[in-house]
Length: 264
Image 1 (tube, rainbow, N blue to C red):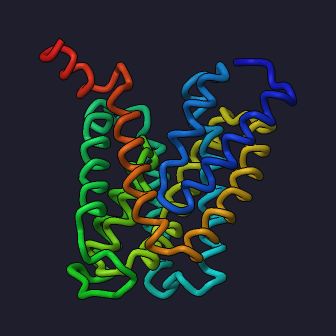
Image 2 (image 1 turned 60 degrees about the vertical axis):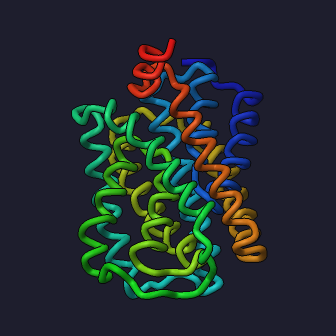
């Protein structure tokens, strides 16, 4: 573990500020902060645990910003938030026993599909449409599944929640972004509760990144509310593609190994 000095803390706080901004709009903040922590010389388990503090702070901050504007549906959202919390905690508990290989291979494929959907769908706006799932079915199936993924692995969780709200619950884009923040915050908090019990969190770094992430998330949420679809759609597509690319070029990703074996 590197020596924790003021320069390192300030640098990681700046990274968290940027990540919080992007995460509030399109998700993917973890793929900015987590590599930064590892580049700083922090071991992977400690980096994941420390990163969850800023991730939870950013998502809670973004949720508060959207809630202040009346964009979150609390009546149906609170039961979903509870199942997301439980799912995130269960994923964190299962972190050591669930094989990550298939998640590493599946995540970039899903992110590319999310990006393609938002890029080529001609009807993405803020209009509510007919839901394909009832709120209760959505709450007990997709929500805990995505939240479990967040606890175990994480990249793209916000985007997955968002596209699920659009496709399955018929929500408009801005409403889906808002409600996805509530569930992402809940799954982050569930995982954080478990990680906090391990003692692996570097508190000074975690707190500095959390404060910066809150500021970034507030700025990102305000931009999303102000510019709506004009900002959310292109940024979401870009972030999903960048996340997929980042995951695919990771040497230990099974898809990366498969492609190198057959095309090198």
